[in-house]
Image (cartoon, rainbow, N blue to C red; front, top):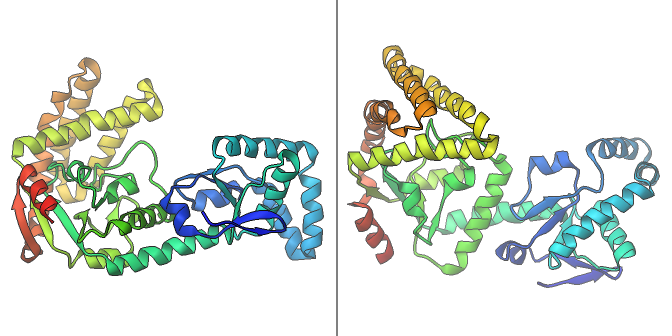
Length: 370
């Protein structure tokens, strides 16, 4: 990593190297800024908390930089300063080859860097331009690579295991994984989705890491414009609507097994991991029934009523006996009565773009031949 020095302290501006190597970074912005957007390898240990940042910002607007600095010195006394440096030091000891940054690479990161040096003797590098420059680099990189990259879409009926197949393909981008959502009405997880900015940052980093491989095409799952609350970049989605398609054909029985695994087993495990075993089943049940209710209009009143009754009975049996097979009736009906008609209609609109059709092994062999 290329390093230069300003006032005897190290500064880094090789953004590509930072992201290609997954460099750990110490984010000293306030928590409210961090929650709006950050990067995958970052830990937030702020120089100022939200209230301190608010007060200092007001003072800066009202009376200028010098008065803002004086207020900062009053708010962050020696004890607070010591506590923050100790927290930074713990990060540095764990990540000696890491970096730190603030929003623009200005006063906050310089102060943090100086405090670290004064109290520990370590010259920990800061990022030139801070978060704003890193974010700008990723936006520009993603836009460029979308234009330069050829994409091929992997399509298939719900339950065909497209996401699992993509995991075996090096030249792929798992959009659903980055969005932390399985892309369907029942695709939500216990933990919330990332912010739109965090999704875009993760997507750009994945694109950047694939670029040196020079693959002739990058595989994506055939997605709609939105994955849960996340929307795909406009340029990417538009290019996807013109990209060739590989169609994965899987038997109805396999699709049912995959859907059962995702809805009745994986989904419950996810909620129990997040909420604990006792509350996990409660939240799992609420999420599952809530997903059914959200598609009530598309299902129609009578069909929704039937499926909800089946799902409620399955949940009661599941909780009492741990028998996941109780979910088969409603999951099977959901596939054949809801997902399949919708999928077949959508597929009819793009059949002219299908370049290969096969089962899982045939599709894998075809993709590897590329």
